[in-house]
Length: 257
Image (cartoon, rainbow, N blue to C red; front, side, top):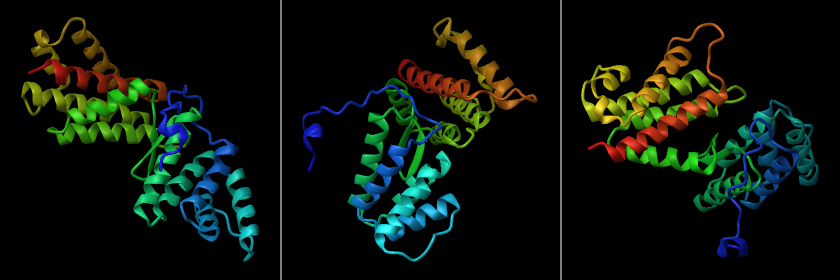
């Protein structure tokens, strides 16, 4: 049953994102409590933490000692291993409703504490602000008849979510591939590049949108497809390309016949 804040729609979910390449100590301790709440025993929790953080168990103690050991090991490990633990705990939950509860609670924690992550289908994924998230979700839905473009857009997000280092080159490549595949479906031409499509269909792009899209294509060529040494896109640049492609796909899917 929903609690008071849920029933009355009082939960704050638009907290600015302030945490991404980190996992605060308070979250680590809360995660252990959540795992117990959804039915995992302390032995299982400790075993998962040890596996994900590449540490051995100290000994065969009782549950109180095991829980303290779990807290100590999770509390002192590298931040990115904590998210490995988040995913692995989910995979150990057998009950479907408990899985859903676990996912919902993780997302609620991320949203209300300014974490730049979301939890979907057992994976911790990159999360933008509320407007960016909605644009990405709507863009994916708009590509329901173009499975290749839809898959490319999802892969772009997967690459941006990789840690400890995001695959920014992959993000740029996949985001622009989604854009190109979408435009091929709209304008025809199975081998046309995005640059060719823009050049041959300028009347379909409201100026200066055509120029902006050409510049984005040029950026992707230099920082995603033909990367020189030291020329890979930064995480901020890759996020921008993904957000732009999501927004453009959504806009063009509505404006083009």
